Amino acid sequence: MIDTAGVTRLLGLRTPAHGMVSVYLTVPLDPAQRRGLPAHLEDVLAQASVPCGNGDGRHRGRRAEVPAIRQEIASHAHQWLGRSVAIFASNELGLLETVPMRSQVRELAVIAAHPYVRPLLAELQRCPSYAVAVVNKRHAWLFSVPGEDISQVAHLESETVGSRRFGGWHGLQSHRNDQRSRRLARQHYATAASALAGAVERGGLGPVVVGGHEAETSEFLSAIPVSLRDRVAGTFVIDPHTMTPAKVRQLADAVVAQWQDSRERQLAAALAEQAPSTMTAVGLDACVKAANQHAIQLLIVSDDEVRPGFRCDRCGALAVAGGPCASCGAATQEVGDVIEELAVMVTRDGGSFQPVREIDVPGGVAARRRFPAPA
Image (tube, rainbow, N blue to C red; front, side):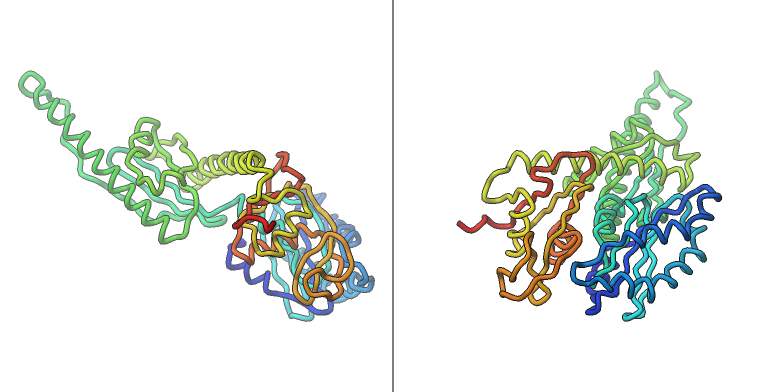
């Protein structure tokens, strides 16, 4: 599975001869359709995007890298049933790297000087590593969910009271037991919340999901530190005594997916409310200018938005129209998707790239700036 370090490493790869082949392919579940996968791969490659002025790039890429890609799919397709996979190949760099993806993405092939990573950047945002806490009044199970795995990182068991079946004199002992049980539960939730905060910090995890019976998860959420509350994606109901890691993962995944969808809508709506202002960039032209100034803090793009553009190989500046580079005067080269170049530039500058699905983004592409636009 891809992670931030993996994407960063891919961003550093470049081939002067435009010999990098990037392929995104979905492996069907149906065995009959899988038998046609080699022919389908050829169809995807036949429509590969290549830079303008590099007409022989497609033929070089197909001649040198495609046999290795074809062999990789033939050998490992059974591991990716019903999922998409990204394959990056460059004979010049001795590179053949396969990245299974958690979700299905649009099938495409790109032959260029560097890997096409926009779908990977989108997956990093939509499928973050996260933490899960399943709690009751005495136990707490903490899980880490990085990529496709789920692992239990801690199990806490706290003190409890004795049997409350016997009420004692006029039920006084039962009342005392009940009060002590509540006090021990509050202490247990506080201890579990502190352990959860530590696990999130050590593991570099993103959102937090809480599971258990509704009354107990509600009590636990009230004990979570303020610094962690903004990360809580939601809750799910599960019986801790019959749960399995796979069931925890299934229920938590649904919570995170819903949280991510809501987050996308909130970010797009907040940016739309701010625009127009000196702290926003709306439209491709404005976003390209802001990126060339290294000024973008957050870039928001609709999934279906793909725009051709230009890039200067000398200084890396982007442009919507061709001609000499506005920054250094050198010649610019056409790129098939300038939004992908934009996302890469923003990521390298330490900004965030947020793709959104079925949501109207002002101008198709919009950004929040780090500092006001120059007058």
